Length: 91
Image 1 (spheres, rainbow, N blue to C red):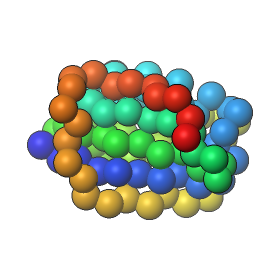
Image 2 (tube, helix red, strand yellow):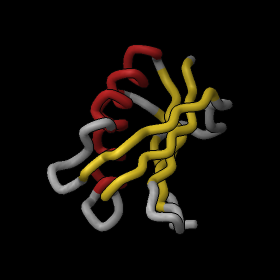
Image 3 (tube, helix red, strand yellow):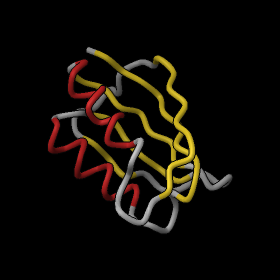
């Protein structure tokens, strides 16, 4: 299982990014969560089959139609302890 913590920067809040990412993750069978951060970025933990995680991250570089992704940081992480993909409250 491949797990990564991701920070997405750019115009990614208020454009449906979290809901879009949740749908993409569920479609690909990726577990984890996504949330907005106070600095205007979106943070996520994604885990699953390596090919599925990499496909989700490829999609996240574009994001939904209204998003403007400037950059994505990826770090290795521990897989979440629960299955499924959650949209968490903002921090």
